[in-house]
Length: 301
Image 1 (cartoon, helix red, strand yellow):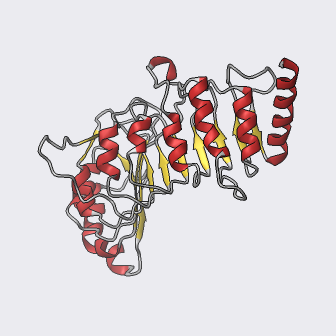
Image 2 (tube, rainbow, N blue to C red):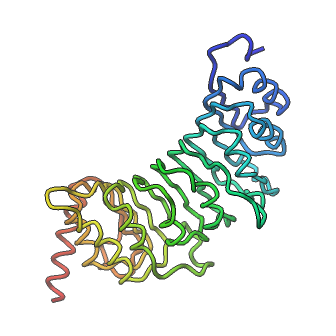
């Protein structure tokens, strides 16, 4: 009834609702051609709704978000990546939030899907172990040159080399934080310069919290922000280094190079002096941190 009575309706949010999947599918069959945004909570009924999307009932869909409900569903969602690319070719935002999901195996001789040519935001953030690998990321993003935001928090299998191979050249937000899971994992010790050297001219937000990169590796990575052309400054305004092996000289260098830095998280950074391991908000606090670091470096030397 809603689909027929509201011909201008183009967005539907049924997260955390008791609406039956059959009703949602009926709605999409009627209103699908004009649908632009859809928000879902994953449950046993989600498969039927996704089946409708894969069948191209919403060819103009621009935003798709599937999140986990309060009661975690133990059965992983099987997502046929290439079929979704064909069914929703206009997708600009794809969020699979805190979701245990498996990309349907592509097979050895499978041809690459069409990609998401309009995709600007991909969020696969998760607080639990997940199955997102470099290969899965490539299947999702090989045709997305305009990506601006990539949120891979909790995706511990992704490596800097896998990210460096992506076609997007103007990434603005990159979130790679590993929250409370680093202890159980063998993390990459090197490779972070591959990320900053590729995107230092466009990155506004960078989150490396909990990553295992070495002191030297982080020094080389963050030095990329001081190598911008004369007269221009890096766009970086938010940097999360919580729990990393970043050193005082590296932090002071990146603050000096990035005058627009408004948020800096140095909590639990083992190599920093006591009293400075905290989050800094606003230009005043960030500059205070720089002054303290320079003072401590001068006293050591």
